[in-house]
Image (cartoon, one colour):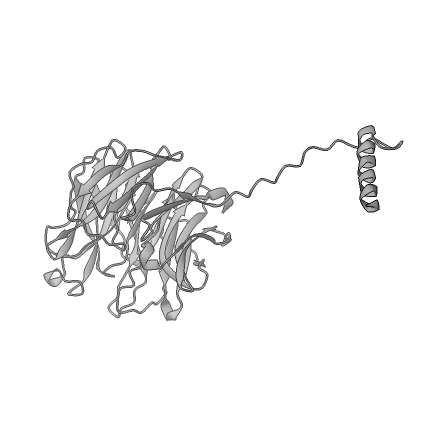
Length: 408
């Protein structure tokens, strides 16, 4: 009881002293109220995708207003759909195509916007083979033209399409072309790499052979420099070296294929792991996967001369990469690269920022995935100060996230 009385008296005395400013001392200094610290800004911000879980194979691009266009395959509806996302809001989705779509996470649809035109590509079954279909929109993806095909209507293997803007208008397209495969069977002959140009009315012209023997099922990529398009792809030599080759287009036509770097990857089967490139002016960045000498790695290399030469590669992976790369060049000449990294029992989508002086930021884990095969090939686009990443999230459906570029 005595102890309790003393504590109560002490508390009363302390309260009195605080009220009168202390016993002859300086009055207490007023302090601002304590506020909780602001939470650190998350580099990765998920974007809700409200269009169902039975969705795969997303493609992304951005338009001149900074809005993001996302296309995807709805497996239940057998449709290729597209929707616009801007300022945290989705706008009404549209259907580009419906029918006998070939669903393949490796040979996924492509999407590109330039010159006020949006072009979408997808694959359809054609007998025992596949066929490329492409459609254009001149009204911001609200309506779409009748599809066109850049190759002969034969039963064979076609796909792995990529797009880039042409300097004089129109859009350049490259693809893997199986018109020389005997009976249309993969492996029964050589897969070709071909190029064509699509004008704003959807007409296809300038169908050209770029390389008569390439890897059968690795993704292609094409980027627009101020000198003209630069094409990168996985080549295939007579003795099964499957390194990345580069072809340039100039006023004199297309150059002969030249290795981006002599990795020396000897592999008899297709690794299903193509390169990606982006460009601004004469600056080009390329990202690719190689497992030469049983040492898998993801490399990034920069060019200052429109892709004619590249600096030594910069390795960005964490030691167990699965590849599945994409890359986007930023306004300051640096680049953001994404890839899939294997981990114990699963995998993760990783991203990092790389500078041409070989400096790089820390790797950021965008998402954990069951395996590289389940995520497909994540695709990225720039929207203002963010990188938009889209991937297949089986069984959850298409997934999207934003990376805040200044935080990388």
